[in-house]
Image (cartoon, rainbow, N blue to C red):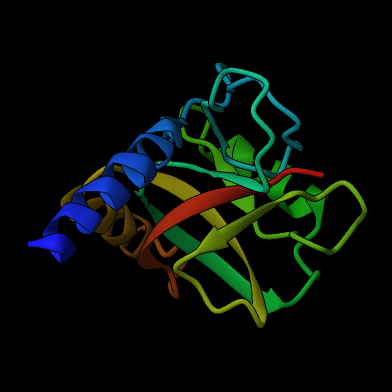
Length: 156
């Protein structure tokens, strides 16, 4: 009985802190990027409001089509800009975390030993698979594959 009471007290203390950490909605349209310290090669997402100090903020999970993989720090901003012109209504992004001083966004769900170029593909595997299949059929990105990701902004 005491252990149940202790567990209840612990949950009462921890639960509000956990619920206060909101997961950010992705802003998938490059014409309507979310505000924040994002770079042109980042996918953007809504950040928690308030002045609470945080080590990081995470986006909601989303699906992406990986267009190209490369060694760490080898996907240039120019490559991202070129690919973005091919997808005017979908955000193109690249993993450049820790490649330059102000690259603060990393991605969970991919191999951190490699960099990638990707395009936002939606909130479902079905949407992502359809986009990947259309790219493969057009022979635009024959090695394209789908991944479920979430972005993480590491606060300075």
